[in-house]
Image (cartoon, rainbow, N blue to C red; front, side, top):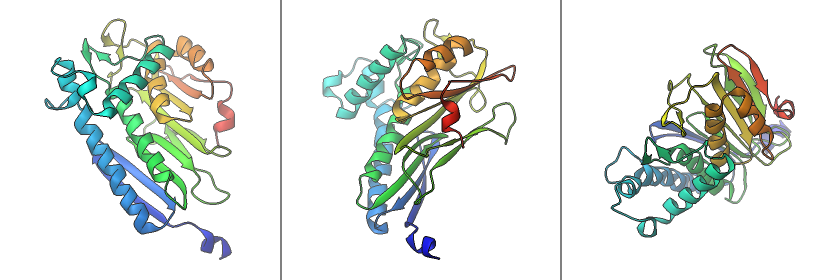
Length: 263
């Protein structure tokens, strides 16, 4: 009973935005204050959608792509995201790119960035102990849900619908993100930036684990396009990053430190 009395308050919410569902789980804090911050976080997601959607003719990214705007006249979030995307492109040696079939398209980084930003806004609230924001299966975790219990994320098995390939634990760290790129949910949607066509790869899924969803989302996309051998070698070279790669032949390959993150 004593443990139950100490359990932090829980506020949960699901929001349909950016063509997917964002799920929030916030532990601790004063519930009314958490709900107010949650409303701000959700508004931020809708604002990001309005700014970055390539499906909206009037979005700032669409207008940038048509040379109707330059970055200096855009909302500050646009410059921030493009700067982060340029860093991801540099680190991945061009395997992550904001050019999609010749046109500006930073949506490969926007969802992870928006989810991470929403999570950090909520985690900064007084009394909040733990935050989980899941944006269409890519998750940013901060803090912990309860004392002595860590956040855990199930990684879907792309070859066995309904099954899990692994369970990732955030034990021992204050921030952890998990992102997966693959063909199971959306088909062959990942583009090889060298050719502008769908990536030809032996992989069906890449799951990347690291501190920041903004970047692990980009790393999963880049590694998928590289293929299992080059992708694994590159992911091994990144600091504070672990990964699980699954091939079409049902081979499972992982970075050396992934085992410490499973549980």
